[in-house]
Length: 99
Length: 99
DNA sequence: TAGGGATATCGGGAAAATCCGATATATCTT
DNA sequence: AAGATATATCGGATTTTCCCGATATCCCTA
Image (cartoon, rainbow over all chains, first blue to last red):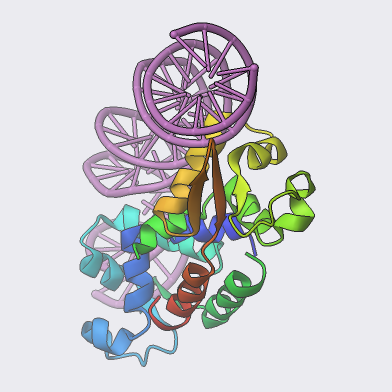
């Protein structure tokens, strides 16, 4: 739980948006209704919505993952990303007690 | 309440330390026992503890203030900084509900 | 096993952050 | 008014972030 790394990951508008979109994948990624979102949302869907290049979005997702804010699952050629809710819970507590 | 600005302000080890020191000024700034800390701690004390130059620490405190995380009071030639606890409370809630 | 699609990684130009020394401003004292 | 002290602001060298295009890797299918 590296605090500076977490806050750096959160210091970007697009990355904050991605995290927000992943709160309600069924609303924000209707094209991916086939799988039930238990795995998360694949990079391509997120990239399309973000409107940035594939490499940039892939890098942003790695940044979020290194910070522990999302988890990924590889299924075939797709990598699905979803929020790590526990991390947000812990972060919220850290801000109240430690920070 | 600009979220990106807040997280950027928190994305620095020294600034996090300053915020932490200001949680217990009487413990961390014993040299300033004369005034009762209601006003906060002056820049010079923080600078000495941080071990960075005066200009850097002054700039860091401005950054924290622009983000709303600290408040300042000018008294004579001193500027006293203290935490804005309300901001941390709100931030903690934002992480739980909005982020 | 060849080709195609999804994702990751690499190299880089532009912009922002980091932290410094020098200087400006404000205030207090004498 | 002059000197001393505390803080703020400025200019800049260095590092980091942002975001891209090109390329590499992985996996699936014909």
